[in-house]
Image (cartoon, rainbow, N blue to C red; front, top):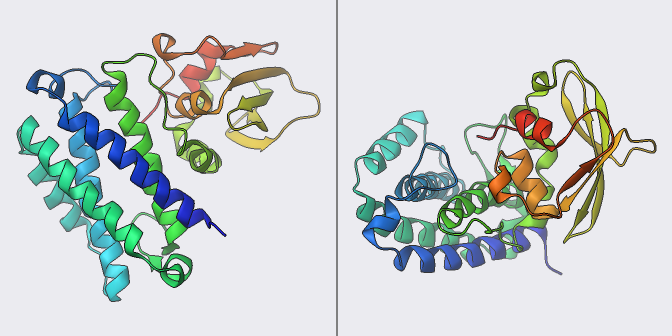
Length: 264
């Protein structure tokens, strides 16, 4: 039986192979061109993914060896080294660093995938491989979209990643949502998603909370699941919004939701 760790690691592999092929084909001008991340060019997005791969690999290797996880000083040294690279160096280094991380995940046997705990440094306690890989997949899949959308406004989040990312939306809302953007308005939206099909709810008040589908919603948000993931992570600007995304009824519209979810 395929575990959630297996599914997530497979998505990391397919995502790496796709993005690596794109990066290898890029010309120098492509690497310095715009990305979906407002303040970064493509090489800076790739740098973020590459440095993140190094940091994730160090934490994973420490867990395997039973040693202490790297401290914040290690992370800062990694970021500084990547920041100093040229765009071409960032691309080449990303290919190596992310391949190493994905390969290490793939090398874990079923026992390690079930029982190993990794200290990621930003959580109160170590987490299992399913959670560790899912955090990495969230980062990777969204920033891979940032790279792709620079030249393809119709780009979507990789379908293999979407089910895993949907399972993390509730956690994301704790730090990504800005309910104050609604100026005190409250609402309960039904959320009808496709590919995969999901029925959820979003409750807007002093905080934004993911809920079960409300029995009497104030309005309905309908969207492909990957577009919903992009919405709550600030990646659904009008020029990147499929025509199938709609908000009907209720006191909030799609522009309101974009303000509530400004991205990170």
